[in-house]
Image 1 (tube, helix red, strand yellow):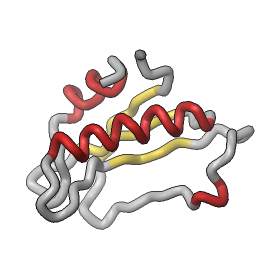
Image 2 (cartoon, rainbow, N blue to C red; image 1 turned 180 degrees about the vertical axis):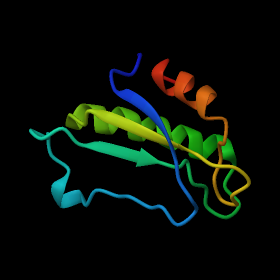
Image 3 (cartoon, one colour; image 1 turned 120 degrees about the horizontal axis):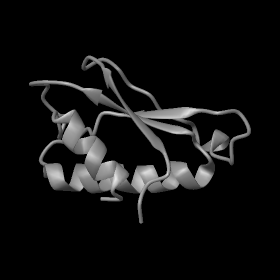
Amino acid sequence: MKCGLETTPVTADASTESAVPRSQATRQSLPVSVLDLVATRAGEPAGSAIAQTMELVRHVEELGYRRFWVAEHHSIQGLAWSATPVRIGHIAGGG
């Protein structure tokens, strides 16, 4: 299944964090976006974090989010993916 969300690369640093509280997780009437850095937990393989990103893409698309932002980052511990163009292709292709 291909992703219907727009994907946009952004530059971010390690302190950037964004989340939507569960209480607000409803179909949106106002265009909103999600930023994902593909963070990993200690000892977690990068593939697992990437799979969780794809789950997040599917979930926010079902909720009506308009855009899924991905950040370009380099050499930041705890982030699984730095090749933004490859990540955009992966997300747009549905994983």
